[in-house]
Length: 182
Image (cartoon, rainbow, N blue to C red; front, side, top):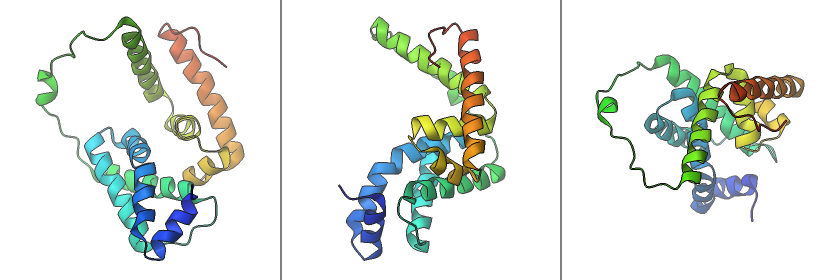
């Protein structure tokens, strides 16, 4: 399998399959990352496509091993800029949605509840802690890559991850989840 940088180079040399593979690989995770800022998945999808459009029209030089960090850093900047210009809209449709049918087995319901609690607790974290945890655990980035995305030092990321995990552990225990690993 080709590296991200090889796929990007493939696109730069005129082969569109490099672009397609990169969007396929990073489209959904990048949308989820942006949604963490915007809390609107539809806007996040639009901004994800805008991020790729910007990247592939500007064609910046990207060093080996840095494509993912560069992509997420660009998305972060676009999300922050977009968030500062956006107006919050209240929708009455949100009030009329019916709850999902109770057809799920008990274990799936339990997992869904734990995930909801995790997301609620993540929302309570300091935004830097939340982003550092998201990038390192959910996106699998190294501390060095997360540092590039967030514009921080590796030491700062290390501290944010440690403090974020400690705070998250306390929040999860408050919500009744006591089997949290260190």
